[in-house]
Length: 334
Image 1 (cartoon, one colour):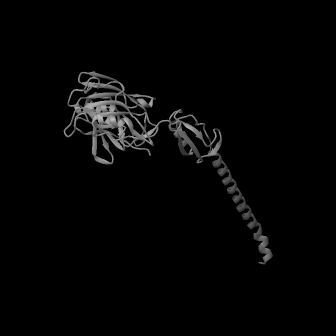
Image 2: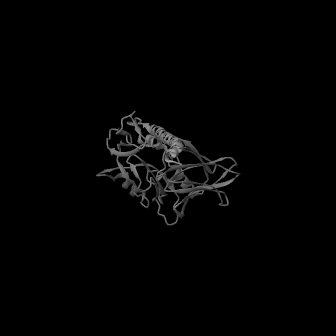
Image 3: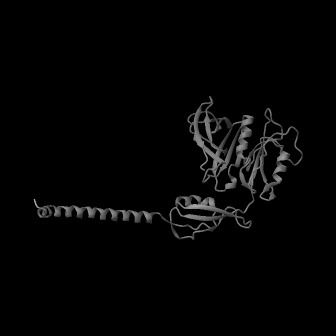
């Protein structure tokens, strides 16, 4: 077969395949461009107006928009602490998801590292709170309340055995400090608070529970959700019915779980019985603390509590035999 015959026979077929291949290439390029354009447009977001709002209220929204936030701080004592006073991208502007936005947050209150008061006498602890270094100046801390507990072996009377917030936590000077103190060995002077299991609204519920555990007195709690952060963990009301205490306790649901803070627990009793609660340190199995003395519940009755967490912990509900009924992990999110 001559070259001319081969050309006349196969060239049309080759042209046909070339046409198909070219069409496929054009199709895939067009499809890629459509997908690219759609993807490009779907990643565009509108910058919200966040100036004047507390950063902790807009944090989740900015994360949802996939914006990369760079925080700066300035101090204006006449403005509200924690509010955003500047944003680098104007409100309403359309930007790509993943864009960087700089926010300036006001530090209206002095910030300090909480001093370690544990082991100090109550008088010494109060003096330490009167003069705490914040930058180059000294500020004073406000005492939120004192809860007294029975003295255990190895402890001194009238001595701080625990504190909220914990030592080392960075707080504002306006945050109230709660102390757990062993009972004094002598009668208090006139005008000073009397030691005893006399709880009142505004006291620390976590420390009230600790005092009741030491005294082996049962108690029940009802968690009351609040939108006012300063009430978090405080007693709303308390009743003593026979040998048992009943509390209503404020709880503020955190947006993010950081190194420490208040947590809540609610669980229905699976059957009639006596139950208690302990908290275990996830990083040190030897560290555990009883936060609720054995208390009798009816089947279906809600077992509730609010406690103060430091680090990663596991709360364990035990029955009267000490067997685990339910456990829940509480961990840092950062």
